[in-house]
Image 1 (cartoon, rainbow, N blue to C red):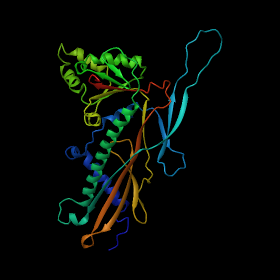
Image 2: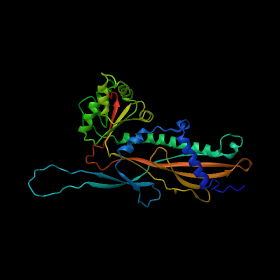
Image 3: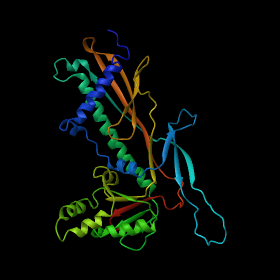
Image 4: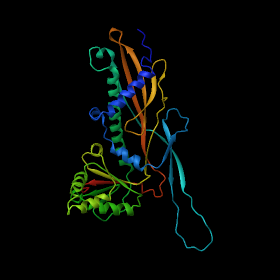
Length: 337
């Protein structure tokens, strides 16, 4: 039996995509494939930089160019002349290598489906959905680790938090609704623009209870205070990465950016030994590179093997107006001692 790469032609590969989409529309079935990745959603919401494929010719580097824009150098002066105009905003193009490169490999064999009520295309579709979920959550944890390295200096050294290097420690007793006022002061004095908060378990239960009590006459105050915080909770990834610490972050608009690079063509391209194409993630704002090959197995049936690969990264705005103000602050529940 011939086992040329491309036994699954473009039509069949597209049928698998359709089956995966149908599963994701099924409220009951899709629960097995729902990813936890709120940290990625937050980064998406603060990203203002533009991303382009890298112009570098080094074939060893999977890179991107990121364009950051900043307004620095403005000053307030006495009006002593008729001069109109002054400093310009700066547009900075930075080239980066994508450090995150992860894959999921899986195989399905036609021989396993001879007496199976499920067909092999559905099985492969579910494999793709699981790969998407697993890579998304793995990248989310990578993103938390990157945010940790981006943390800058908190200029508010007096108050509920004790600043130690690039971290601020806040005792457990202070993690309640009144902490919203402290975070507001921190955002203002650190000159953060439209900041958003990212947290794991810190404040999750308190904010949940405050929402439930908002309808009570004596419960509106907490809800109002929490309402001033643009909070993203990621219970699965923030605390997993920082275990045993409980961490919360404040992130300024425009301080972070994400990028990916997928090199395969949009439609399946059949080569001598394998087929390659791109596939959109159901969760990440990225495309995966997908590779497919087949082999002859039992009774001249065929096994179908796939690799799903993601090249991506998270970057910090390197061209801010203040080298110490990175646009990211980290807060730990504890005393720091």
